[in-house]
Each structure stands twice: as C-alpha cells, then as structure tokens.
Amino acid sequence: MQRNLRFRLYPSKAQEMGMLEVLDSCRKLYNYFLRKWKESDKVPPKYDLQAQIPYLVRQWPELENSHSKTRQYVLWQLYSNLRGLRGLKAKGRKVGRLRFKKYTRMKSFVYNQTGFAIIDNRLRLSKIGPIPIKLHRKIKGSIKQVHIKREQSGRWFAIFSVETKAEKLGTTGKAIGLDLNIENYLTDSNGEWIEHPHNLLKLEEKLAREQRNLAKKEKGSKNRLKQRIKTARVYERITDGRRDFLHKLSRYYINNYDIIGVEDLAVKEMMESSYNAQNTADSSWSTFIQMLSYKAEGAGRTLAKVDPKNTTQNCSNPECGKYVYKPIWVREHRCPHCGLVMDRDPNAAINILNKALKEVGSVRPEPTPAEMKPLLQDFGSAASLVNETGSSFQKP
Ligand SMILES: [Zn+2]
Image (cartoon, rainbow, N blue to C red; front, top):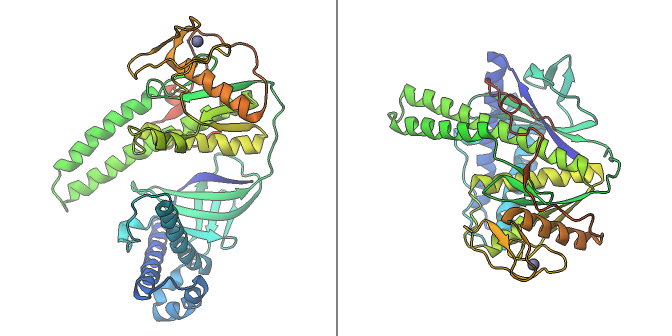
C-alpha cells in the first residue's frame, strides 16, 4: 500500500533560490502546455507534448535547472487536473476552465523514481544539492516519489510517497460507530465524545484577527507582505495541529476496534441542503475518514461507510428502531414508542454502528451504555498538538 509522509526541509539561501527557480521553470512549462491545449480543437495526446520537452529545453536554457523527471511530471499534473475537472463535471458540478498559473500558484515540484536520495539527515536533490531534513520518524519501505512543497509562509516540506507492507493488527472483537457532529468533534457509540481541540479554536480566533489586520494594510506595501506571511504562519499552525489531532484520533479507533462505522459523507452532502462542504469542520471530517480508510486498509480493519438516512432520527433500541423526529436544537432522543431516553449524538452513533454491522454481516456486540462520558485519551491537550514554533509533525 502507498503512504504519504511529510518532513520539514531546512534549505540554505542558495538552495532555496534553486528551488524557487525550479518552481518557476515548472510554471513556464505548465503554462506553455496549457496554451498548446487552448490553441488546438481537442486535447492533444500526452506523448506528443512530452516529445516537445527536449526542444523546449534547448529554446529556454533556464529549464535546465530542473530534473528531467520533474519537467515530465508537470505535464502529468496538467492532464491529471483536467481529469479532475471532468470528474467534477460528470458529477453535475459547475466547473471553470483550467487557468494559467501565476507566480505564486506553483507550489510544488516532483521527483519521480530518480533524482533524490536520503543521506545523513540530508535530502539530496539532483540540481539542488543536499538539503537538511528533519526525519522525525522512520521511513519503512521504498520511496517512489518526492513532492517538494513550499508553503505560503515560506516553509519547505518534502512529501514522500512510500510503498509499504501492511502491518496487520490482532483482532479486538470490538466494533464502534462514530457520529461526526458540530456539537462535539465526534461522539461514538460507547457514549464517549471528542471535542474540537481547544488550542485549534484559539488559533482560529487568532487567524481571524491576523486576517483583519491584513485587510487594513495598504496593497503592495512591505507591511502587507509581512502581514501576509504572519497570517500564513498561523494558518499553517492550524493545519499542522489539525492533521496531528486527526492522526492520533484515527489511530486510536483503528488500534481498538475491528469494525468502524461512519456516515458516507458524499451521500450526506447530496441529502442535506444545509450541508456546506466549505465548512472547516466538514472538510476535516473527510480528511479524518480518509485517514481511517487507509489506516484500516493497512491494519486489516473494516471501515464501513453507511447510508446516513435517519441515523439521527431513528430510535437506536434494536427492539424498536422507530422514526422519532427531532429538529436540530433538540439535543435529546426521547422515544415515545419504547421509552428510550438518551443524548441525540450517541443515539445516532449507535444507529451508525448497527448499520455498519449489518453491512459487514456481523452480529451486534454487547448492549451500549446510554450515559455520556468524555473520552479519557488526551487528544486535545495543548503541548501535544501545536507547539510554539508551529512545526508539529504527524505522529500517527
Ligand atoms: Zn424506541
């Protein structure tokens, strides 16, 4: 199975200049190929364009600063963007056209198979040199590809695509349903809940303040540029902290349960008119489910994505299961048919668990407690999530 691992790079000034030049070469190539597309009636075959690269390098000697595979990958990226757009269109979404990339829009370049090596805590990149890298965890398996990425704050990262062998975990005999909701971050079918990490909420407030400051600065001024970087740093601390939180949370459920049920977010999105995919909570839910999904695959666990229909409304008592309507502000499930009274979210989580077990064809384990209690694991604790330098790393 394929995994992505992210590490911080600490390039020298000269190396950073080199990498910025590669980004610019990639941007030139990208825009050149896109122009070729726009000039022709239909999208030309990829290999026709690929064959032009050596001529282009002769024409623009500055392209020599990038590795040959890096240049080829730009073309691959363009075709992949087109496939992405077509996919969205097929789903009935409104999509625009591919646009030429401005200087700041080219954020990463790629080494595929060759042109890189890790030697003595340095990532050796062809055409750039040995860049100090913080290897905060072991890389098990073979590296297929490296994305070199520049964040808006100016920090650089290497993201390795690694082919690893799955390490199956022993069975636990336990299953769980997870209800992702606005009230907490999630509530599970044991009645335990995880709150949105307090630190991240605080940082989000800080981000809003920095964004207001940015809006006040004069366009094109030095102060505005400074403020933009400051704002980007806060934003990245939030992203780092959230990634770390989601890794720990998904790891916890994968280690402790054989079967994990969640709602199918794609179906939920279609069903609920109020569902807003731009919402931060929502987008982090889909990241969370992706993490659960690949970790489940590696560990030999089952992740069941169930139909979200009536998971909130139905009574979770297996002998009852009747529809009990409750608007969003009613936080309690009070069943007039069987008398079950419990909080709204664990009721939903148990319904999700039951659907998951049905889908997997497994029997229902021991009855679930109706009482809510906070989960003991310290997911939201301050120091573990976001440190002052803003460089918290993934610890799955
Ligand atoms: Zn009932």
